Amino acid sequence: MTARPADAVTWWVSLRSPYSWLALHDGQRRHHDLLRTARWRVFFEPDAGLRAEAEAAGVTFPYTPMSRAKHLYILRDVARLAAARGLTPTWPLDRAPDWTVPSLAVLAAGAGHCPGGPGGPDRSDADGRDGEECARALVLRLTRARWQEGRDIADREVVRRCAQEVGLPPAVADASTDPRWRAAGLDELRAVERDGVFGVPYVRVGREPFWGVDRLPAATDALLRARAADPARAAPDGAAASVPAGAGAAAPDGHAGGCG
Image 1 (cartoon, rainbow, N blue to C red):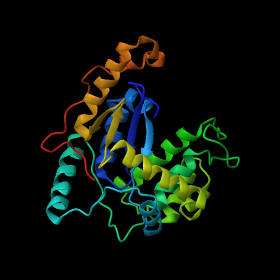
Image 2: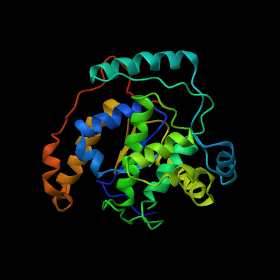
Image 3: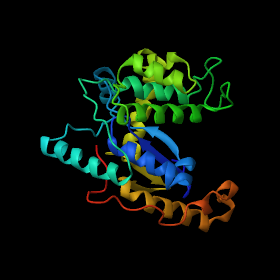
């Protein structure tokens, strides 16, 4: 197995989780360098078909349904954390949502499914964005649609509209029906198991894992320490200097600010 560089960052997002929404909010405002440096990956609950494929491949998915008590706690905790950030969550009504629909749409966008036709991971779209930038744009738009607009992002038509709003082809909404992207989804589930992900937000800096919104300052510190140990790998354009060690406040009145 190839060694993971000490400053390699992976940021696991979930389109389902309010804690992932809050972490992305904090990442954009308090931990921009960490968020920008990271490779974004998608933690999602697979549909029955993909779950069966994962089980056949020996891949274990860590998600388990939450208890009523935990659900009620999360409602209060997220309300507190959002209010501390000047945000008001809109709680969507989930009716047996298929999380492969928006999640595989993100994988399709990230694999170069941008305007101009399919391409490789480094393909640029008409606006000069590479595949990763396309995926990030869709993650942010879908996250906002769910948690600030109350939209059902497991609805394929909602995904189409969100994709179009960020300049992506509406066809990404059909990724969950395409064998290529279902195979990519299985690879993502393998990576979930390999990285030891059990909930979100989950950030890895090198081999060090950080779970929860209030662990983002520690993850930023770990990234800065890794760069200090190897100045040749410092962030470009002085980005590291813009995010001081320990920047950002711990999540008030709650646990680590994460969920499965």
